[in-house]
Amino acid sequence: MNANHTPHAAKRRCRPGARVRLLARAPRDGSMDFYLSMMLGVPVPRVRLLRLAVDGSRNGEGRGS
Image: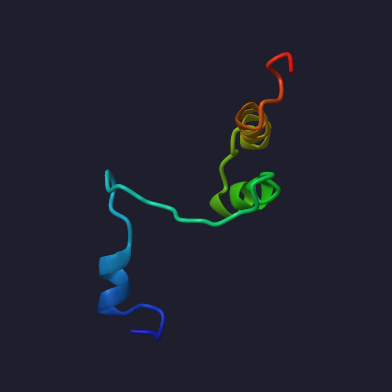
C-alpha cells in the first residue's frame, strides 16, 4: 500500500450517485470561471455574463435609468 492509497482516502472517494459539493471563492467578475472549468474538466456556463447582468440590475443599471 503506497502513501497515497490509505483506507481513509478510499472512503473519501466519490461513489456513483453520490452528491458532490464544490465550495469555491472567486472574484465577482467571474474571472476564475475559466480556471474552475479547467480543473473540473467540464465547461462552465457563461456565468460571468450572468453575474454582470445581475450585478447591473442590483445597481439600477439597465432599467432605463
